[in-house]
Length: 372
Image 1 (cartoon, rainbow, N blue to C red):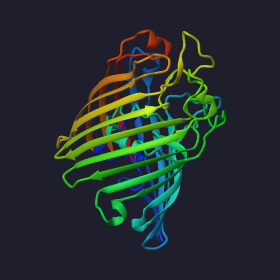
Image 2: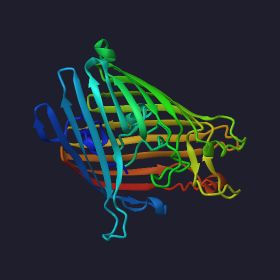
Image 3: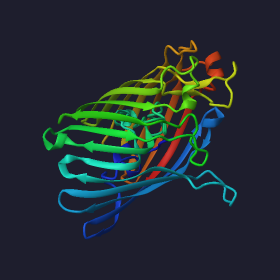
Image 4: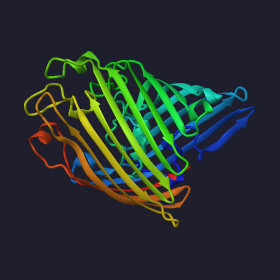
């Protein structure tokens, strides 16, 4: 659950440049901000893995240092701790690092940073990742360059070197993240070297369009999962998005395709006729979302998404995800909001969902967020 107050710009979900963080140090051109949110969240579902307490604390630091009027150094670190675990030294509740990177901005020439950051495919996917209790579920974390990713170098340029307002682009490189028990890297989250590009153009009237493309090498252990013995060494994806934000409305739509990138199944030790897993050789992804912000704080939402596997070498052609979400959030002020969302799962249980460990069921998400 990625609960957030959309209208209050929760700093834990965005870049260090976002307003809303509290300044705790400012001296001689060195600025340090702290930001965070405390989330009280709960799922209600018959599917046991998505039922129960989902409360957490998310916090971080962002900093800037002004070398001169053109060169600015910056850094960002964000961490999350679950609040549902019991006390005790035997409980591993150290949390997880969401983001952590450092870089330099060179005026209109753009910025470059290295560390754990968002993959450029998320430049498009973030436009539909705005539902308080859900959203952005198609682009998985630590899955090549689709969402939060490690070992990435990112170059970003805004307004095309200062010549075209609203035209932004990014170029990204990711180093190899091999299987590693100490870092938690598994077949599902490992990757070879890869790169990605993205671009967006925003008009003054609230309309905007974006596109992204990523291409990564797969490690040998991922390639051998293919039924044909591994005919393609690469994982690829492209995505397009459009959105409108204005007059209280927010409407966005994205379409994308992935090749040898989208995982399915439980990734157990052995493939059996009763339990299948791997990466689909082609998936088509669609996300739609609409919201309206009332002046008194209410923000109702409705969204639709699906991810469909097509032309799988194993012969499957099924929906991996398909659902409608309706809900609303109420913003009391810039620090506190409440949400309720109802996700209607449109998948039906069949031999494919059973074999790939997909458990379709409706989910209700309730939450309250305090932002500091």
